[in-house]
Length: 164
Image (cartoon, rainbow, N blue to C red):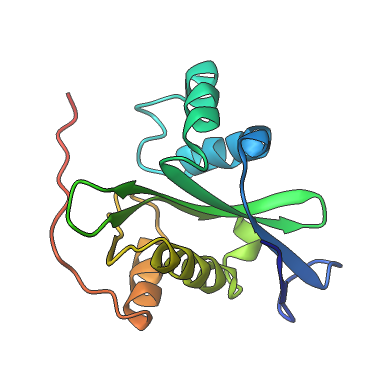
């Protein structure tokens, strides 16, 4: 699935952003985004990425239990959104794993495009609920919450953490 997005405010020489579903072959493109996400999150001093284990997990899960949508500016992977399905209920529930884009793209409408496409793909997969647990501790969380409200999202619970 390729979708071209026009960004007039995007501070690059590229006039369009390509967005497509990831495949297991995209794992090398996803790993740097996951590392940057980790660095910018509240978990940066507590965890590191076990690259071999993470790569093996992603290769096994992408397209099976996890969906990743990637955004590209030319050949550069600049953002992603990912989720997994909890199919233990009568209707599958999608649970967001990550939404992340490189800093220069955060003040554009790319986040809205990624979320809209994720909701569309999930709906096509029969999903009835899409949960967005936000636990990264990133300073952009408030902006993300405000954007999700525009999609009709509402708070339904609390995420709590105990560091052991």
